[in-house]
Image (cartoon, rainbow, N blue to C red; front, side, top):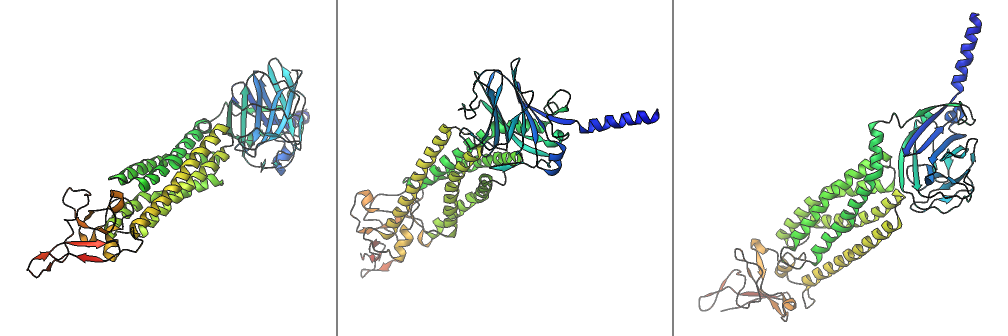
Length: 480
């Protein structure tokens, strides 16, 4: 009697051990997915897996996919068949922000229990090659895996065509499925009555799962919009202004725009790190390039301040100048390119978003390049003078200010130009300079004022304080 009781207990324990385990996720209203990984597949990492898509017939189509984004994902779509009694299972592969394409090589099979009943679509699916597909892999020996889900709520599709054209989803989500909760059982249909026990992950979801859902739903749009504002609009406009702003105080407009953009870039970096951490994207090109740009931006305001001070002191560009200019241009062009990579990584951006970004980035990129070329040519003309001859050392110190901020300060004394040549409507044959008085700005042409330099006595005993510098680089001293 005692032996018989032990035998019964042993058989019951064996039966329980072989019973399949289903892990359940319900990311949308009236849409649930279940997953089972048989023991053999969980042990070897290869073999069949089973999943179920269960959704209301109010949905036009519902999809489940393996991967963290739509691009390169292994996708399974279901919709009502033409007779309205069964479901059509369409295996597809994701190609980014376009409709996924039918995959005729997929090893999938609809199992018993699939169909349409009482306002619900059910697809019980066996997949024989879900451990590896054209653009990705999934290790069923691991504790969790990345999955995506999407749906469209509309009139039933009613089609038997596996390549049926689909309208874009109303909503999509990406989540990490705890595979450990789905392991167990043999390689048989686990969805028949009494064949499995179910673990509903949604009911026991933690705050982190809710946080991840919020991140996936809102943060990509926030990050993308802010990054476009910073790297495609504000930084280029600030760079254009410093080249073309030919008016007093133009540099401070440049500084203001760039500081606003730099502060906003902190938000771009913070949101990008959050996305990359949550979705495990740090191995992708977009976040890697983004981090490089962030590092380059850290010291850019400091380089700009040093460049400005050294330029005023030396009257010419220094190593700090070239560091500031080179890093700024690299960040702008790198940011524009990385924005395109970000759109590709998102995978589900609509065509309007792609076209809009391309147009804005293209136009401002061209304007920025044109401003650089124009600014450098203007700087070169200013240095060479109207005659094309190189200026003298003294003259170079006076006019070598190609940043639109005025003249250099030769020998410690701030100077102002008395005549800027053709830009002021005069023939450029000579240029005179005089010291700036307190609170005085740039003056108009004058042939009676000049910069005092080492006065020399005249035969009459008076000292001359007139000196002019001709544009051929030779200095002339008037004797009075």
